[in-house]
Amino acid sequence: MAQTKREIERKYEVGADRALPDLTGVAGVADVVDKGVVELDAVYWDTPDQRLAAASITLRRRTGGDDAGWHLKLPVSLAEGVRDEVRAPLSATVPRVLAGLVRSRVREAELVPLVRLLSARDLRHLVDADGHLLAEVSVDGVRAERLTRDGRTAAWTEAEVELADDGDPALLDKVEKKLKKAGARRSASPSKLARALTETEPKPPKGQKAEKAAPEGATSSGKKAGKREAVAEAVRDAVGDAPGTAGDHVLAYLRAQRDAIVSLDPAVRRDLPDSVHQMRVATRRMRSAFRTYKKILDRTVTDPVGEELKWLAGELGVDRDQEVLTERFTARIAALPRTLLLGPVRGRLRIWTVARRTGSRRRTVAVLDGKRYLALLDTVDALLAAPPLLPAASAPAAQALPKAVLKDYDRLAARVEHALELPAGQDRDLAMHDARKAAKRARYAGEAAVPALGRPAGRFAKRMKAVQTVLGEHQDSVVARDALRTLAVQAHLAGESAFTWGLLYGQEEAAAADQERELPAVWAEASRGNLRAALGA
Image (cartoon, rainbow, N blue to C red; front, side, top):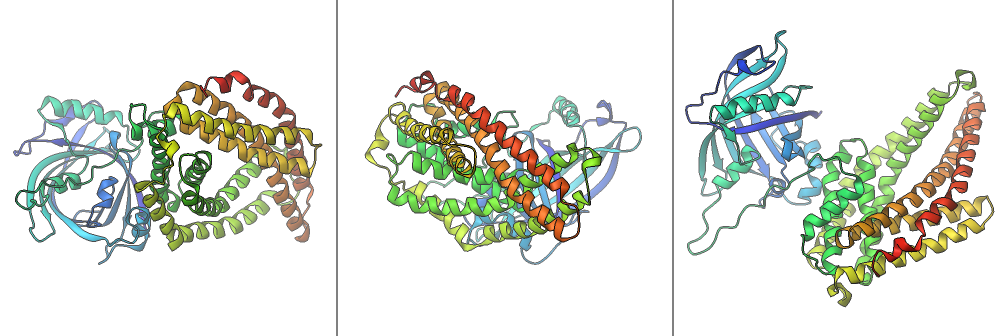
């Protein structure tokens, strides 16, 4: 059974004398408790081409200390030194649960021992006046050995300050101030492994330049940016500040979605909040881009990939849709007066949720472990490595992208107007569902164009999102009514009252009617001509 621990730490370069200042002078620290020296022996595993190291992921088998076992460290925010450490018991080979968490990076490649680190750790505990642990401070004398034929070695000394569970991050700043006054400085390497790989890099043959190990990639900076801004920032990072061609921008957007899918894989396996939703969104954004920018990328190549992305989004949707329905019904039940809760309503919802959730979770993990999913990742990598660009890809981004965005708008306009012409009922429900999908595609098109077109594309995407939200809430009510009918039938067959489920059904009908009344005004704002004219097409 794997366990997870959130790790917040900072590393420092210190002198060979291993001396540290007296940290009892740090505000809040009442005492420094000497815990002695422990010998640690860690072997780090990776693919021969260091795929995990390139993603700032470390996998090690360590003996010595009170946490001996397998440790997988997944970056949360490298800028802040935050990582999730997933632990598993000692075994001769990589534990299955940890192998699964790195599968999107490793694929079919073999994991092998790459580097061995021997550390003499001088450990101290910083405690408060009540003896509660605030942080661990260690000074490590490290010897690294590359586990290859040449077996190059390196040695250094470093200090490490790790915050205690639920500790105040402000303490790290206070300790750092004290350490810097004593001459310590922040380590240039984010981890011991990164430093070991750099300093034990095999020498190239005479006359040949060394190939640098893949750099550790950065993760979330922790800024409170919106999802649309985060997407645009990822694309800008890939494209750079140069104007670029339409092909440059589309490929940068696609790479950002590919990277999101791969990095979210372990979060989905760990069942982290919102991870399934975000991974599903990334697959949809990529597929939508293939369709929007069909004049830039050859559809004969991208259409089959798009179908596989549709399959993946559908499989992820089984889990996500259940999660959304459960949250929706729980909130509605909580808002009802107790006098209207007739029968074991909450118990019936739990039974229904557990039965569906358990099966969907197993199915989701099975999909991520399957050959079809891994083949899709390889196919996307191959497409991005040798993109099927059409002649229009060489056009300036500011010229080609607006045309593609506006075509998606025209598609949406036709569907919204058709839905508004229909009377309330099943036909309108289906038409609004089709319009919702078109609104999502137009929104994604606008988001993808933000790095090239700037604020006009951002405003366009925002308006399309508003339309998508109204239509999405309407569709949620349609799906919810179908599920509520099932719950009512199950309650009736079990001899329970179905009154409350019928009441909730009525609430969902009213919610759908509200969205239908709201749509014309939202669409009027989104369909203003100046919004499209600002795109410069």
